[in-house]
Image (cartoon, rainbow, N blue to C red; front, side):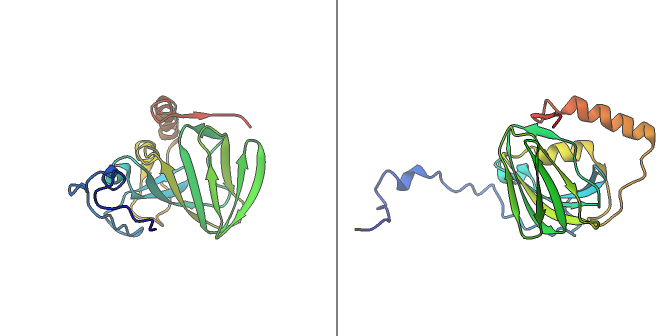
Length: 181
């Protein structure tokens, strides 16, 4: 007996045909063809967008400065982080967990969470969101920067206030809310 379905079986035809309209994506985090944005004082690079995955997921390279990280929030999609460099403190449902380079953290949909860089140096991680959409949110609310290691722009108080209003207006569209933990 074999586990390979025959060409005539219904399970073999349950997989949709290849879509030749979709292309292979190869992303260089330092490449000129990927967008770099400053979000919450860090620099995020969209390596693979939802547009490239038919909305299934997105992949974002995140450089988080010492002391940086988002405020507590939750959203109705899965979010997974693989820490490549540094150390972060993840707060999940009010309980903190220190995570070091090499670790992966999966945050279930709808769970309140936050992270903070506690390593004293820039931390780097990859963030996968499924389904996609968080990439679009970051692009909408972030400040464009030239490259992955470019410093964040010096925003004026007025620019920061405008970004705050934009974030508040876009949170419902991107299925996210700020919370207290």
